[in-house]
Image (tube, rainbow, N blue to C red):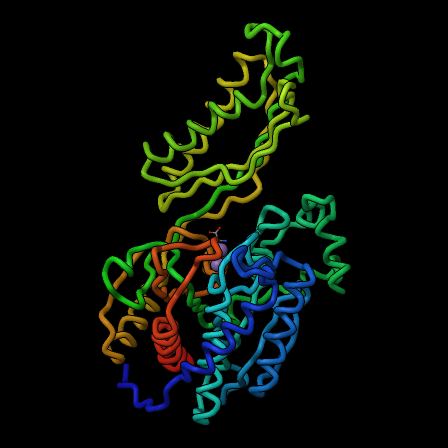
Length: 416
Ligand code: HGY
Ligand code: MN
Ligand code: MN
């Protein structure tokens, strides 16, 4: 690969300004409760408008596809050539941080803006994308925009309901999107040369190595389960212990098993949401609903974890004569990043005199889905204390600039 003769530099100040401006959209009034921009809500749609305006201001061809993905295109010299795609998401979890997803979208815009200002003539077009509903925080599944683009979004997704009973279909219509047209978002593999995503690491490897950026090699695959246990509500005082069908105690037993099973297999697992009903202090809960998030870089090990969870639920429920039901809300295979792109990112690191640090990714990203239709690579940016999905999430201005400089160099290499 010929040496890069690029002298332009990304504009750190401009990048930081857009990050802080986007962080205001959906921010809690006192800032302590972080940023909440759930998919297809007013806040998330406002964030998309902010991104659309930024893309228009730098002269990209901007469109929103059939599922609300925002796509800004910088045309290459060969209109018949495939595009290099780069981006992330701007929806957040409840009370999330200011960098998760946002850095990937705004860093991509800054990199493309620098390419355009330098009037670089690159063969391949570059498409910056902000995906719809990566997090799945509102409807419990996620990766909606990338799944639609990859042609793997299921029709039944539109039947999902959020906690206030609004269906995906209704939320789509509210956002002026037509749920019957979601297949129009599909992109053919031959249209996309590669997909690159810059993201905060959301763990501590880079911080412990005292490095600002890293190159991802593999990504854990998540399985999300919705578990429902149905026993009998009864009197908390009068009902003998031997005659109870206590759904919350059965849930508690399973929750402890989630941790044990994850540790035993070298994966990760947690229970992020619980609800017991009817929810009175002196009523034995007749119903317990909770979520389980299980992940592993190895598909076989993850399957064993899932199997053991089912066995644990069955054992805890049957001895109490409690009914149980498990819905699989998400199951995405672990994946490896494209070796060619990892190598290309490595060369760009060397060009920038950044130490080359390769690492695995614990979180899930749209890149997991995009790897199903194209070559995929990821750049990580250091997270302070490894913290994320938390208002305290933080990446320094300098580290965000380093990640964007690496993204800039990588885009030029891939698009020329
Ligand atoms: O769940 C995840 O790993 C990502 O934050 N959506
Ligand atoms: Mn993210
Ligand atoms: Mn996230």
